[in-house]
Length: 282
Image 1 (cartoon, one colour):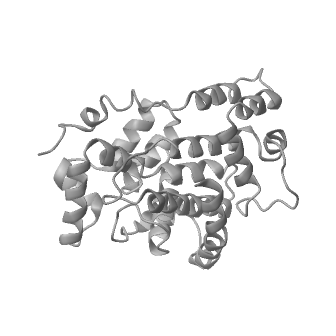
Image 2 (cartoon, one colour):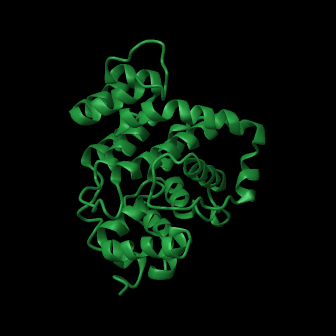
Image 3 (cartoon, helix red, strand yellow):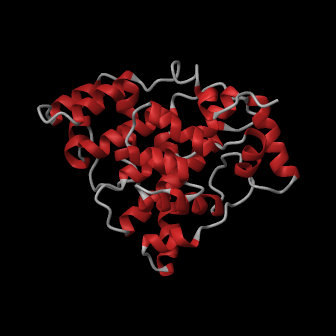
């Protein structure tokens, strides 16, 4: 039996106990406050030793490939910038939130490996397109399947059935979710980010990463995550419980304005950064 009548019903009672960590809210407020300095932002991050350690591991990894070691959060803020570091803090904070999902349903290490691969591919695509802040695309890639974690947490048995059905019928898990629930993880994820009051870019990208033509406000960002997700699946870097490679929307690829000749560079960069990024983030 379907556990809820609508996506909002599924989220009800969940978002209250899974609100974003307070440190992210304080960090976001400080980043967007012109009266706050880089030193103020660094001080907030230092109050969370776990977050501090994760961020320093990331900035000292091949993800950035700086020529000399970054020793302090103050240095990291100065070198990377407040918006970029805030985006990384958001991604790593959310990744700490989902615990207790049965291993026979989804392997969480593999799930986050897929998410990291998608984030890396999105960041590389953003760099190739000369985006000013490719870190926001990395965060969107990390969070693109977050709705599936909510479904796995709140409707474990039904998601187990959806996974079995997708394998039995050789169909995308996305389609099995739609058949069983009447909605998909993309919608749940978008609504969750909306509830958390995260940027509209993230909300739309997550909600439409499987159906990029439906994105009206941020079509390029959504197309980027759509392509990045397919790259991660094709490279078989982790798994979000999906057993098939989703189809590529050719209009999404065309919207990015990139030549097919960049694909070899894209794959090479993701492959080179992947292991180090996984070890730094997970």
